Image (cartoon, rainbow, N blue to C red; front, top):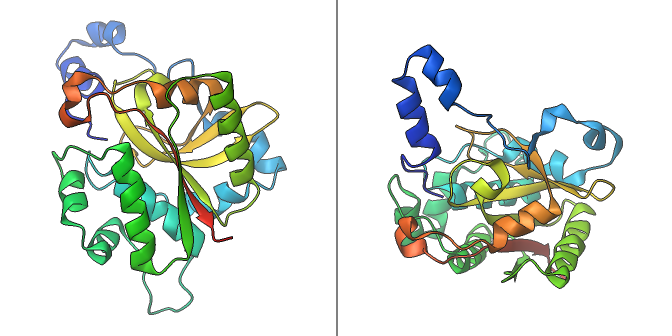
Length: 251
């Protein structure tokens, strides 16, 4: 969501001002133990069809502000489903294009630099508005678990399996990014790029590209990240939990 100079960003500022020896002591790995850069293990993407990865990865672009993860992720999801435009005169839809098409001033303000970012329910609502604005015949399904129970885990796996079968739908995940990466403690939105059932891992296609490239994490860690409430320092988002927002093909 909005990465103000807290935790990681503040650490970067402070570390930059320290002597080299101190920097070596204060700095830490880009990804914690619960995430793995996708280039470290490409076996699944090379051996499985991985339709979502190939459909969506090319359209995942950096969020245009530190608060724009929602519009960046929705734009990537819609572009991935629609594919590259057919005609040479047509441009690929940008985040700003989609905001203009929806005409949603609230979404634009929440996504601007310094904006609050969106709640889980706003992500659901704004996704529906975006689909209508581009004329894409899809439904929006939400899954918002309250605790990391066995039942919730089973639902997560079932949705990931469904999503992995076809590029005609997409799953966006609202989660506490730091639970996965070991970095800042804050809410974030990204696109699911693949699910490897054999290793029970999920590929996160990051729009937070100032800091990350895609990474794998386990289903259990991702579920923990979805149910962790947002801390008080994030103001109006305090107490927010996350989940999946799925764009589904019309039945």
